[in-house]
Image 1: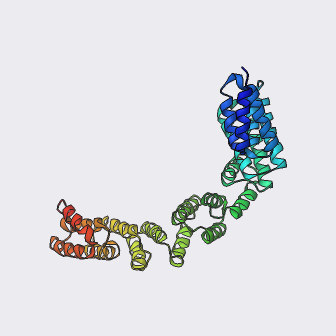
Image 2: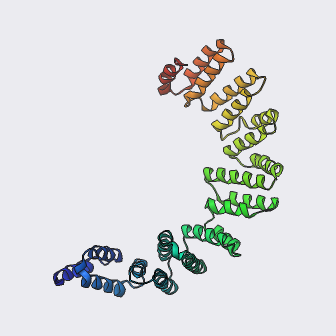
Image 3: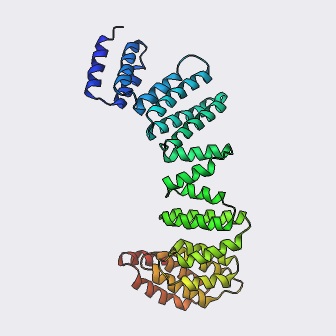
Length: 351
């Protein structure tokens, strides 16, 4: 079939939209039609002449090597050669990402070339590391690979990525696992606290810290550092963790922690909920103490959390003094936001 008219249309389109992504999209469309070989060749020529070093061009040409006839191993080598040539001459974070993505995809499809693919990925990732063009995802994968290979590079690469991506939680968690001495672990934690600001990340970091210390049979050292940090750092989740670990030493230790922090902001619902759980578990329940906890809890969160009042009413009704319930209801109605009062009264009728 004569494709002169199609070529003319494609040329006009490529002249109008001078972007490699657009050219590749036209190429992918043309490849659906067997008669469009000449059209495809012309589009590839445009990519090679106008955008020779662009990551999209290189990625397209590299992937096309895999579609040729021949042994899978040879096709993979040709594909990698295209990537490595471009990455050596014009390295970019985008192209390293595309190259690694292609090889990872091949690792799923071509089990017979797994050794070749792993070695090729290591070569490309090392090239990216040396040129400082690897992105976050590529460094995560690189660390995974060289760890599997028991590479001596691992610690050097990890130290590098902690400088390049200091707020990435995963790298700090890996660093913790590498440490075997308590002072090293404490230093890693202190360094992480200087750069990590997200509360969820910090909470996860502390959970990993406790796990690492437990595996090293350093629970007492972990508790001492947790106790010290809870006093120095103004972090609500850390007080909850401190409370939970203190309870492992007995209710009296947990009470001491609660007394120390119960009135100090930032407040945390779990801090009150957890101590209530621990107090209610005791063989001889201290009702006066539980009532005081509910008083503090409701003073901090009672304006917007209906459940605090419902739980308190339920506990007084079943285990405390039912005569206290009217006072709790009056207090709740005065403390809750006006728009929550009706909902509260409806829900308490079902207790």
